[in-house]
Every structure is written in structure tokens, then in C-alpha cells.
Length: 215
Image 1 (cartoon, rainbow, N blue to C red):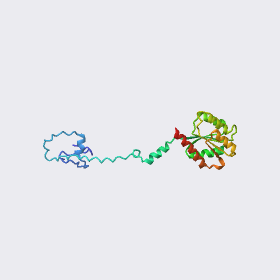
Image 2 (cartoon, rainbow, N blue to C red):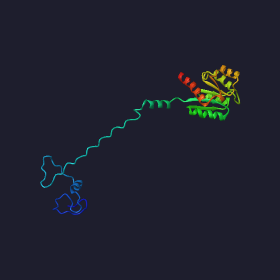
Image 3 (cartoon, helix red, strand yellow):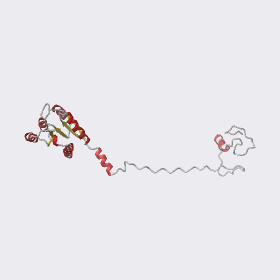
Image 4 (cartoon, rainbow, N blue to C red):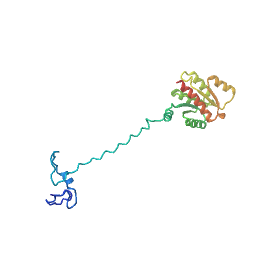
């Protein structure tokens, strides 16, 4: 007989289950190579040869508890924040010929959640009004090609924009111009030099919310 582990010959008188040379467990090594005959349960065990103890299968480890889903247990405040994130954008057309002032207004309003489209003259304003829809217009009066009051008149005469909120944002404070703007349908007349950014954002939000509530 040959040891399957060290390949050395074993004497026939070696009735032990351990190799005398390498100490390998012969019963396990031979069992892998030589199919063992199936012994009926009632058969007696051969004398002098100890029976192999039954292999004990270790119990399966306990399954870890399922991790609770954070999404399914969202708190009310999380849902509120999601609703705020999904809030409809507030589109504003800013008509101002001074690029420096226009950029300052635009940057601040965008931080307040507005989407701002800038127009630097009446022609650009007309083009944007034809191809896009807005929730609010911030309109200067002194423009290089036409007066802002003319734009306001056109807005009120157009059925698609007649109800669009318009805030006049100008440094002109003369009573006749203010009265004309109000007569043409300006929703608010604000003087640039007397209006802070926060006041402008507050008024803009107020008008946009009124429009959103009607939709």
C-alpha cells in the first residue's frame, strides 16, 4: 500500500490509519481516491477498526438583521426638503441696459432661487417674450432703442402676456412717469437707488407666488 500524501510504500502490516512516514491521516486521503462501499445500517462494524464518527455540519451563522431602508422611513422634514427641491423654477425676464447692474441683479436673484434671463434692450426683450414664458418681468424705462413703457404697453395688449406681473425698476422718480407706468398696468414701481436687493427679491417672490397660486 502506498501513502497518497508522501508516496512512500507502507508495510502490509500497517493497520493504523496514520502514515508512519509523514503522519498523514490515511482514512481521509484514501477516501478521496477509492470509492467506499455503502454499508447497510444494520451491518455490523468490522472488529478492530473504529468507525468514523459522523461529520458534524456546523450550524449556519445567524442571518444579519435586515438593514432598515432610509428611504422608506423618511421623516416628514425630509419629505418637505424634497418638495422644496422639486419646486417649480421661477423664471424672470430682466430688462436692463446697464450690464454691470444687470449682472448684479441676476446673480443675487439666482441665489434666491430665480432663473434669470437678461435682455439689454427692447429688441432682445421682445425676442425673449416671443419664444419663452416668464413668471415675472423686471423692466427698466431708459433703454437704448425704446422706452420700457412701450414694452409694458405691448405686454398688456398681448393676450398671452396681459396678466404677466411687471415691476418697473428705474431711477426716474418724476410723478408723471410713475403715473403713466401705473396707468399702463405696472404692478409695482420701484426706484433702484432706494431699493435693496432683499426688498427686490421679496417683491419678486410675492408676485411669483400669486401667479403660481392661480395656476
